[in-house]
Length: 329
Image (cartoon, rainbow, N blue to C red; front, side, top):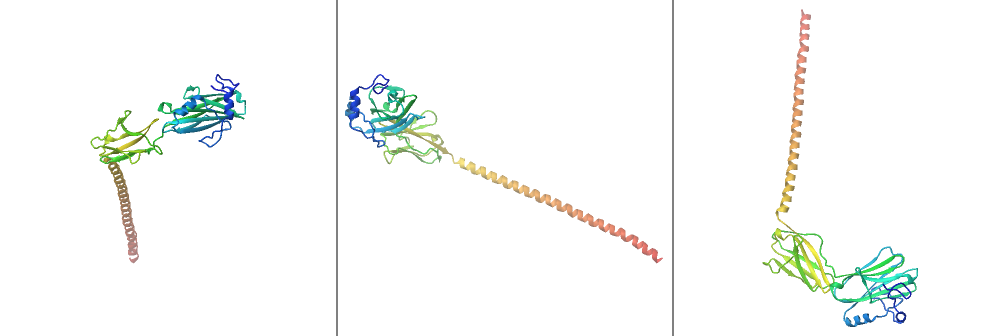
């Protein structure tokens, strides 16, 4: 925990250090181009570190916080190779800066020494400078400003991510397929491939009965060619990129289908079409048959009606003949 002179905290910097801070030249941040109103001075540890790793590039990053910030502020930083790191947090408050305590942590571990604090106007600055040379130094670095409530800014360091299509790659038995992983704007030291049908990853051997071929047109990409695919080749394939500061990986899902699979779908569709046509034909035949029975019934009724009419006509004519005979007599 660090604080300004007369503030709470066990390691308040001495007055000559603050005077050096005010007299030192202003340093411009390479991250956002702003010039801090109050510069920082160098500690002996920082000067020793800068001399030892003077050949490494400098990465500068800033985070701004206020007393009204409701959520922690986070910044993701991609780092491919060893570098000198300069992290700066600024905290703006309307209260008394002397009541603000400042600390730095890596993950949950409290960082001591090698960070500075300074104030100007209503803004409190803190800066932490270190060097990342291996994977153990990667991770999250956070600055904390504790006033009425705690405000936190976090810098997350990670190696570059790999880019690949997220959708499964579908192919067929007997075909060949090329799986590709790419790292945009970065150059891994080495690439490796693994296959997995479950929770265990197995390195892909090259060559293996002329089954696999690994190559890449550029240093930032790798290609795995699998020939004479079988259903056993189906599963997850992982590409690992190895950097100086860690590893990054991405997986590709490979689906190998038998030619019977699309054929089964075609046969199922054909069966549905045949069934539908058969149902339509049966309905048509039933309709025609019903119509024919209806027509036959009507024809029968018409014949019966004609017979009935003829019978009535004969009966009506018989009395007339008898009547005419009577008149003649």
